[in-house]
Amino acid sequence: METIDLIGLFGAFLSGFTFFPQVYRTWKLKSARDLSLSMILIILLSNVVWLTYAFNKQDIAIIAANFFVGGCAITILYFKIKFK
Image (tube, rainbow, N blue to C red; front, side, top):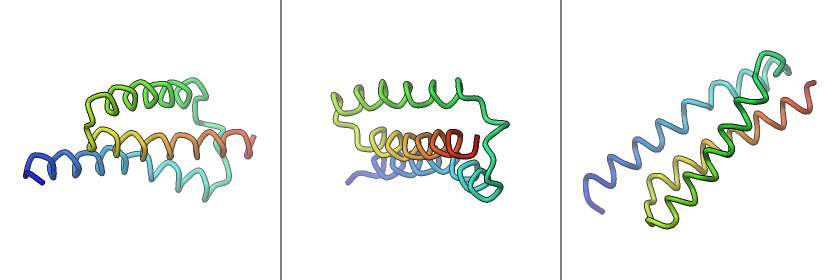
C-alpha cells in the first residue's frame, strides 16, 4: 500500500468520525428533535452516490469513508424515528 493510500484512508477515518459525536450525543440524550430529517436523508443519498462512484473507481478510501458515514447516518435516522 502506498503512502497516498494511507493518507486517503486516514482522511476517510476523519470524515467518518465527524458524525460519531452526533450519534453518541443523540443516543445519550435519547433525543433527535433538533436534527433535520432532510439533512439525514440528503447525507444518505449522498452516500449512495459516492459509493456508486467509489465502487466503480475501486477507491477503498472513499468506500470506507462513505460506509462509515452512511452507518452513522442510518443510526441517526433510526434514533430520529425511535426518539420521536
